[in-house]
Amino acid sequence: MDISYAGQKVLIIGAGISGFAAAKVLKKLGAEVVLSDAKAEADIKYDFTELREAGIELVFGPQADSLLDGVDIVLASPAVPVRVPIIQTALQRGLRLMSEIELAYILARPPFCAVTGTNGKTTTVTLLGLLLEAQFDRVGVGGNIGVPLVDEALRVGAGGAVAAEISSYQLEATSLFHPHVAAILNVTPDHIVRHGSMEVYQATKEKIFAQQTAADAVVLNYDDERTRGMAERARRNTRVCFFSRRTELAEGATLVGDRLTLRWEGQEYPLCTVDELGIKGGHNVENALAAAAVAFLAGVEPERMIPVLKSFKGVEHRIEYVRTIDDVPYYNDSKATNTDSAIKALETFPDHIILIAGGDDKLTDLTDFMTLVKARVDELILLGDAAERFAKAALDMGIAAEHIYKVGYDMGAAVAKAHELASKPQVVLLSPACASFDMYDGFEERGRDFKRLVQAL
Image 1 (cartoon, rainbow, N blue to C red):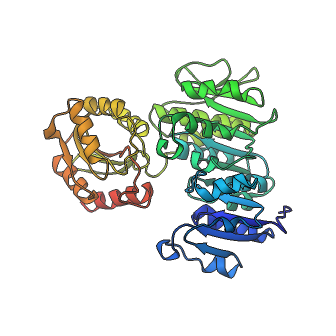
Image 2 (image 1 turned 60 degrees about the horizontal axis):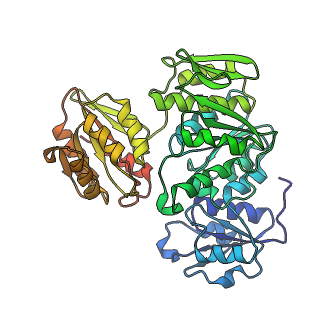
Image 3 (image 1 turned 180 degrees about the horizontal axis):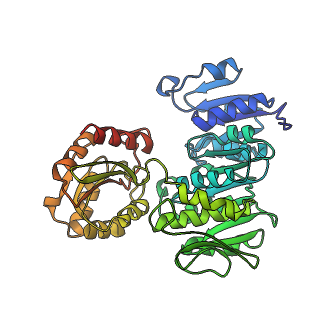
């Protein structure tokens, strides 16, 4: 670790996981570090003892502009929008703004691989990490997946590789972020409340390749119109590799018949068939093609990928099988925090679904989602803030009122109702199409609560 921030004062805005990690690393690198959060300390469920003992100054409550006095760098946590007054003032003063993922990139050694997209990030990055492990002795997996990226970048060091899951929230405050291989899986309506418009959301996603050079590469979904069009903005700077499960590509990651195949610079590398792939569903074929493309461009030999692609069975909370009760299987898809992700889950099962949906409403259009609900769902169980709007949309779509149940803010009631209604050949699916923050601290807590309740039946 030969990078120093000695003599620089860094103000970190937001006392979350990434803010904690960045504060500790920057202190070790010689910076004077101040960590500020607009909440009162009593309202934050973290223990700040370690930071205090490290000599990091902590400021809680209203964030006055005087916090910026003498500051060289402002580091924004992902939960903090750049529109908040103190960050806007920092930009007006000409201070450098960065995020924890940018700090991680600065500290990392190549290859540094970063994946973003509205849906599929966690599955793709988890698989990518395993593919990289087939080639590299040390691999770090972090970012939006729940592990601070700076910690992984430092742990891996030279000679290893990093696989990073990157959200639009993390990209918002970046200016120098520069992954050696980047990927954008898809862009569909999400986080519009945070970003203000679909156009701003997409532009934020595109920051993942904005600083790349001709020595780098970006992997884009050919089947997604928005991501396909990004090639025109990336091509000036970097190599573009498309992936597609719908069109057989002359170059890129593609299906040749039913076999996942890499085609690059005149060479063809057959991988496994769709049936041999360990993760199931059309969306997972896309995730596997993307992960294979990124790994290949990072230096993984194709033949080393094949056993990994066959053995990987997916991640927790993404169409995760829980148990079967009275011949009815139960699935946890708590990771489906938007309608597009929930649609992919509904498409995995042909019909006879008992769907538990709802939560912290993102106010996205429900037309496509409810169209598929009408076609494939037998009973719709709704909970959380979104229940009323979802119920109205279901009725407007022509779904009969007697097949719609509202259970308030009670996952236990939702699971009990599903169990009461379910019989063979139905499946019970938690796929909320909403965030979880009206009832839980995150989709992980929601999914584990669902699984606990199912196991207790």
